[in-house]
Image (cartoon, rainbow, N blue to C red; front, top):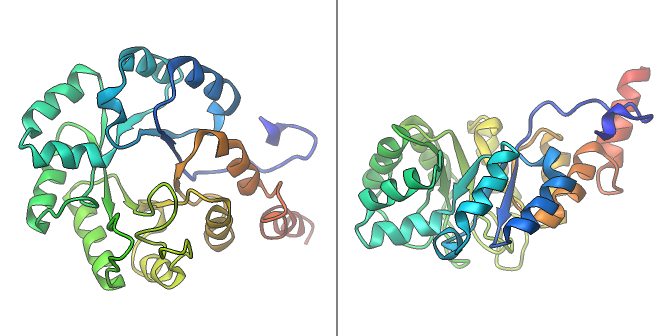
Length: 256
């Protein structure tokens, strides 16, 4: 681990790195984890990729051997719900040994009470990550609704609530141009413990912004596998984007 070497970097205490796996194979997972596994906290199999991956069992074995929790993407949950197959879905999750599940409503409309019921129901058997925000870049919910919905889903049993951004950072917390809705983020942080949130941050600029705003322990999601180590350098202040706020700030605190 880098923080045990000559720079004497402080260990990071918390801060989930939630990785988006878009369908890489078992050997690619092995290579990815061999290099970056120390910095991976949870992996999401994006959308419905888990359902169409022919060697899913082998791939899951690799993640489990490395003790990495795996969650199925929320869009697949929405497809299951639209087909009226929740019971079959739970059986499928158990068959494949999933312990985590995502509950979202970013692609289809789910009545609030029904979504909360589903969070509560699934939380009895699985660790639930719920997600708030639309995948439609033209939909812009008021901040007070985000706050209300997140609180409701945490109360219903969600372990963490993910704030939608899509894999390209163009919806939910982001404007279609890719600009982060910083006012929305501040509203969320004012009323909700940031530790209960996972901010989707698929771009380097957004990752750096969250780290500078909340510190290295902020939970960040939708991180591509090849961006896990670059993200860790941002968390440690080993990249120009955060060296002043993280590395040099920590150094000044130690010498003051």
